[in-house]
Image (cartoon, rainbow, N blue to C red; front, side, top):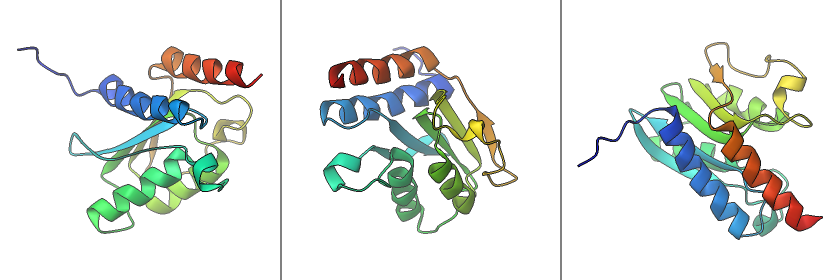
Length: 148
C-alpha cells in the first residue's frame, strides 16, 4: 500500500479538485481548502455566479465553513490552500480570521494582494506562493479560453 505524504502539494491538489468543480459549474475555477492538524476541515470553490454574489469567492466560502466546523471565528492553527493568489477582499478577510498560514498556487497579476503589498494579513500569518502554480494557472487559462 502506497504511503501518502500530506504536504503542501497534496493539499493544493485537494484545492484543485474544488477548482475543477467550479469549472464544471461555469464558475471561475478557484478552489480552496482549510487544513487543521493535517486534515481538511473545510473545502469550497467560487460561487459568485450561482449565488449572484460578487463576494462569494472560494476563500470567503471556505472561511465560513471552517469557522462553523471549529465553532469559532479564529483560524490561527489552520492553513488555507487556494489555487489563485487571494484578492484584496479575501486577504483582508483572512486578517480577521487570524489564519496561521496561506498557501496559494497561481499568481494573480491583475487582482492579487501582492500588487498592493503584504499589509493585508495578520502579523502572524505566513504566506507561501507558487505551489502547483502551473496546474492552477492552466485551469484558469482553459476556463477563460471557453469564454472568449
